[in-house]
Length: 218
Image (cartoon, rainbow, N blue to C red):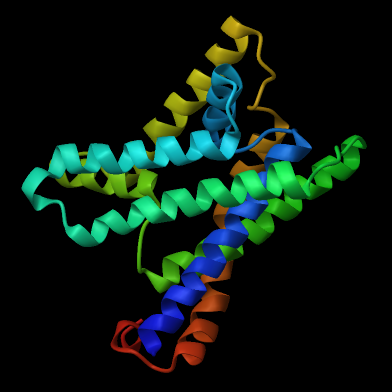
C-alpha cells in the first residue's frame, strides 16, 4: 500500500510538472536549457514539442543502456514510460488546453515566475520520493559513475550544450529564440526555491506515507 501511494504521488507530481512546462513554453519568454532545446528541435522538425521531449528523454535512456551495458538494471526502464507520460502531458496541455495565447508581456513574466516557484515544489516532491530519476539526470548520474567528473559539472555542461544548440538552431534556421529572460529568471529562482521546498515537503510526504525506513534517518 505504501509503495502504491508513492507511485501515485510520483505520477501526480510528474503530470503537474509536465503541465507547468507546457505553460512555460506557451508564454514564450524563455525556458530552461533542456526545454529550450526540445522546443527548438521540435520547431525545426515540425513536430509537437512534447513528442520531441519524449524522443530526447528516451534517447537518454538508450545512452544509459549503451554506457552501462550489463550493469543497466531493469528497473531503470521505468524511465521510458515516464518519458512517454511527460511528452503526452506536455502535448495535451500545450495543444489541447492552452488554445489561446498570452499577449500581455507582464502577465507572461508573472506566469514564468509562478512556473519556476511551483515547479520547484513539484520537483522537490519527486526527489523526496526517490523512486525514479528523470532520464537526463539518470544519464548524468551514469556518466558520473564512469568518469571522474562531478554530477554538477556534467549537468552544467549539458545545460551549456543545450543552450548553445538552441541558440545556433535559432540563428541558422531563423527559429524563435527559446533562450530568453525567462531562463535567466529561472537561474535565480529555481535553485533556492527547491531547497526551501524540500525542507517543507519532506515532513508532509513522510507523514502521508506513514513512516518508512527511507525517511527514518533523514
